[in-house]
Image (tube, rainbow, N blue to C red; front, side, top):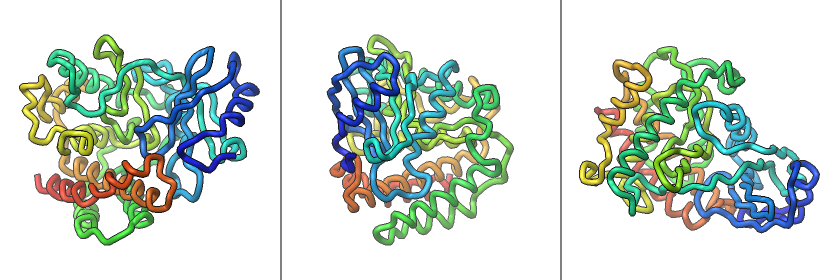
Length: 342
């Protein structure tokens, strides 16, 4: 039983899959994906095909975090929907196998863009990929949650209020030092929350281009990944998550579009992306978008504070990257405060 986030007990995995995955044939070679900070993810290569194993980190974890069982459930439920997801195979909730619960899914053979500038792509492809990203987001928010068996996937009530409360607790549980900007944002965001307008859809929770796999020869999305934060909530939070990412600095760290000449790269403005989304969902506009955007910055700041805490505790999926990300907490908080002013 392994307690290391960087390696897998391949003998234990192979034994388990032999017993539980029809048609499986070893031996296994495993390679850990460098991306992803929350749930360590491994490519499993076998003679009969490739799979992906995604596991909960071992050790003491924040309450409700790293819910691989929820990831498995939502992707399985979306198998026949207009939202592309990888094929789910099995969920193992027995910690005794490799030290924590995990699930097995198909490996989706496509390409991943680490940031929205899509270095190396031409303008036509950039434009088409972002439009596909918009299409999938709208499709996600139009999923009939009752029909796919997800009506109980999230609690009722005001989503924003519930989420701000949850992530405030998570932030304080992972806090390593006082960050004045975060204290100010928590107070201001709590005061600015609008009344619940009754919208209740499936939400991804971390919708961005680097959590998507696209076809190698075109803009079609083959799978949306990383569903750990998914729940039933307010769709505008996902839309704001996209815009939040774009307001970050470009490059490997921020992976955003701040200061980028979007027109020169064939990329839409924030307003154009929001308008396309509204057209697809037959909406006349978005109310209180600044609050949703502030919430997105706040939640991401809380998430990366948790990543930093795990790095300091020695159980981060990618320790070096985790320490780098931890420095962004004040920046995200300042952006959140700015969003509330607009």
